[in-house]
Length: 593
Image (cartoon, rainbow, N blue to C red; front, side, top):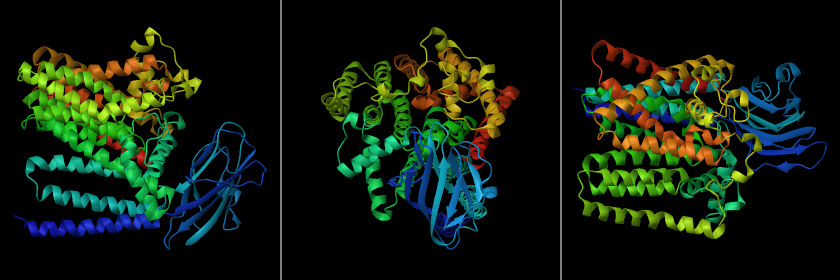
């Protein structure tokens, strides 16, 4: 038996090494500050508060960007540069980078430039000149993920993390808990890997608008008026939680880029908490004998691309996801036990969800239905629990609705819907809600919110693609891989549908909360799309909690099978989970932008 003292000492040594490697990675990452720009041939220079990247909807003949890059003694040499429309000239410390280094002009295409011989330790002054031929203007520059120095440090950090994982998992834990702990730590590692390579503006939704909300609360210590900002109609809980972190980071570093990374790190923390809730839900839904089902349930949420994409975003989706998963867990515990404690915690979680994002309102009818259908609680206690639950709900949320009504009596559920791009609008036809063609999905694996050729008008197809990839195009390098993911996903959907109807026929009371959650969220999302017929209204991020009943019904049908057929289904699902994990890693390494 290995002593606890020795294990603790080993863990501390590896932990300290991991912290040192993370500090080294932070140290060698350059800091870009003092971003300024001028448009056209004018001499007026404007300062940019948020740093790089910058972008404009207006059109001018020329965009000139000025900024400084502070490098440490050991610094990277390869940078990813993205210019819209073209990088005509790049000057570093007065030296012009030759055209053969800049490469040919390709509109809005990121490219890796080897600039090590132009940068020095300390402060470097950079000037970029970008001509415009139409559409948006913009420029971004950051360290490439292919930089040898940064890549080496990241690989060593990952290896140390894996060694630490193996040490804690296989030397101290009981045999039945080893693989659960291991997959949880793999999920944490994948989230940090994606965090490392993803700026806050990449694969995000209105990141600047959400950041404006955070900054407003941090500076004014109050909730803004609905019409004063693009995202100011949103409920305030997420922004109120993040604002102190933003203020603290600004106080310590006084660098906008660092403050934003702190907010992203908070999102990663919330995503890890959500993964822990998934483990709790797995233990609620599956018995100790169903270890394979438990493991696959947790593994799916540890590596699934749709969950990982959400884990670093600067918006309220990440908090409402956490509260939604928590609400599901509390629904299940109350359904099983009838304990009033879980009912009151459920009403608290739903109330906090409503204070985070409006789509949490869909949990209200589910919670009420579960209360009245719960067979182990008598009528009088139910009425008392309903009354006290409503008191909790109204005391926490009613002030917000009263405040919003006082500010603007005509405010809509989506406060900025009147300003959405008209090109996003799609028809409300019957076929739009019932067309699901697997062959067309594989032919067009990525969504395009502005292009009818990508079949954006069909709600089920758009919803399915966005569960994996959002509304983003991951390029030709991952297209074949994306099709494999979608193809395996069809099999999962078939299994889930079989499980849905099998549970309905054989043990309907056990799965009642998950049926209600699945139907409420899916119907609610369809009604949302009907009321707001825009392509962006179909994004799966509004209904991420749907993954919980889908995963359960898929595994429930597997648990009812025996022999070779069960092994084949488990093998299929293991391969699907492996593909999900490999895809997420590939997304971080191969196609970071």
